[in-house]
Length: 289
Image (cartoon, rainbow, N blue to C red):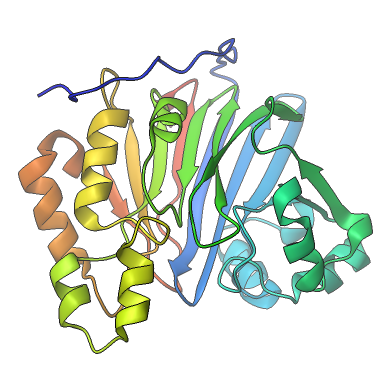
């Protein structure tokens, strides 16, 4: 069934695809206790390695990358969605000062980065409502989303090997976000809570209202409906679900929902774990490597 309403399809000059380019994407961990993912794009003449959010400690990220055969020292920059503690640990300030690691964030989030202790000399702000910007062979399209008072930024990252859509901590999936993520090859999006489990939990009413009130997180059902729209007319080759609540959600519940509602994508689904990396997703020229 087609979505009830479709906004204008995402418009940009497509990034030229190359079978010689390799995209590798791994969620290192995703939950309310910490979020970090790695995107590495290798071409015959270059390599760009980006950490998306830094809510896990530098020691944990370094160790996880080493087990995967990656080196933290190859990381060019951190791309931040926002600066809640589970997405931006303060320990990365020392890494930035010692190594020159660049920190890319929204202009609206600079004061939050400084409050986290990140050095201003390491920050490279971008306009979250402005034009795309380049990171070597990558083109990054930011998209602002409602989340608490400061909001978050989702990203469509175009690479010579395929496109990644990344959206977490979004209070609702609005039309600009859905439009920005249509046609991506890999879609990473949050599926935070089950409404019944949320209501039955012992959490304070104010916290429940914050999470479910349109400026908190996406429920499982809201995630499915967002992906249903994003996936038409071109389904992503892989979907990764982020930020599952450990108290108010369960992977088995999520999988059953996808098998019922989006069976064609259920077989291409990965669910991020709180403290362990998912299996690496690799693509060449838009096809699974």
